[in-house]
Structures are given as structure tokens and as C-alpha cells.
Amino acid sequence: MEKEETLLRKRLIELSNNAYQRGIIMYSDFLNLNELNILHTTPKDSFPVPYRTFGGYDPSERQMAAFLPDAFYMYMDEKSIRSTYPIRILKISPLQPKFAEELSHRDYLGALLNLGITRAKTGDILIHDKEAYVFVHQELTEFLVKELTRVRHTTVRAVEVENADFKWEPKYEEIKGTVASVRLDSLLSLAFSSSRSKLTALIEAGRVYVNGKLITSNGYHVKDNDIISVRQMGRFQYEGVLSETKKGRYYVTIRKYI
Image (cartoon, rainbow, N blue to C red; front, side, top):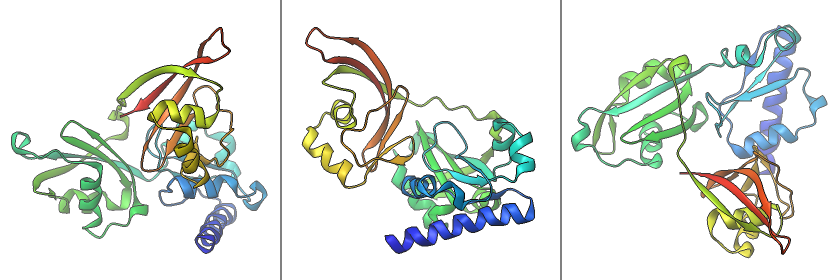
């Protein structure tokens, strides 16, 4: 893993150098949570130009990094910068909804990978009823529209959706409960209905991220509106303290994405 981290940092720094030398925006591939953490923990003075990250919608997990020369960074607002990313959205729908299977995230991802697509060229996969929205690098759009015709046993059609037309309201479960403190391990226990000892092991194993940054401290103090992601388990947003009990515990609310 250390070798992979070193290679990734080298590639990211090279992209930043190219942006500085050529005076154009340079983009990474889609980065997963661990790769985003490597980016965010690389000393800022390693990059000759600043960067921003975006995955096609808020709040995406897999994101591209854009390295911005001064001419872009100083004169473009966030919305304008986001419009430059080479990200396209594909909607995958069954040709015969009545006979379509219940397809999972793994099914859609498997169909993409079976076409020879590398994971780094695809972002998040969002599932709504019997349709899915997939964020991909723009260079793959035409190929996938033509070649993605089946997911498991279901015949599908892929069409591009204009970014401006895309609206996504994530489904979530609101959970309220009391915790001894607004520590990361306490909130994880509330969100996933599991023991703190088990969740502490996940934190120590490097599977927990707050706003895309790896957190390995059980006592990390979570702030209002922070998004906590646990690899292979899910994610939730901590909304804040509603009240304090007479025994000094905190009554909090979180939104767990489903």
C-alpha cells in the first residue's frame, strides 16, 4: 500500500506541475475515499497550483481532482469550475421494466467492468427504483451508450443525461438518539446499531472517513453537517445536537443514506 500511495502522490503532483507549466486545468481520474485522503494529506506546498474535487453531484464519494492555474482559480467561481469537469451522467434503464430484475450496485458495476472499463474512469453509481445513474469520464460516453446493453439477465439501455437536468434527492433514514459525547465512535454506534468496540476496530483499520478524510482516532469530535463514510457499510450525515439530557448526554440527529 505504501508503494501505491507514493505512486499516486507522484501522479497527482505531476498533474499539478503540468497545470502550472501549461496554464490549463488538469484532471485526475475518479479517486476513491482512500485516494482522496492521500490527496488531502499531501503537503499543500507539493502542489504548485491549488486544486478542487468534484464527482458530478453533491455529496459524491468518488471524485476527480482539478488542478487550477491562477488564471482559472482567481477568476472562476465554484459553479464555473465544476462545469469544466470531464464528467458525464448516464441513465441505465431496463427495456422491459415489468420483467426487470432487482439490480444492485454490484450488478451495475460488474456490467461496466465486464466491458473492460477501469474503475478509475467511473464515479458513483446511484440507484433509483429500477434505474441507475452512473457518473463516467466523458471519453467513455459514446462507447457505453452503444455497448452497455445488459446488466445480469436484464436488457438495458444507456442514455446520456445533461448535467444541468440532473437532480438527485438521496433517500435517507433519520435517526435520533442519545450519546455520551459527539465522538466519532459514539455516532457510528448510533448510526449502525453496533457496539462501540466493533466500530472502534473499523476506525483503527482505516475504514472510516469524515468529509473524505481518513480518521483513525476514536475520539475525533464530529462537527455539524459532517458526512461520515464507512467503507462497505454506508454513510450518514451528522446534523447536530437537539438537546442535552439531565444526565449530561446529548440528544442528536443523523441522516443515514439508504
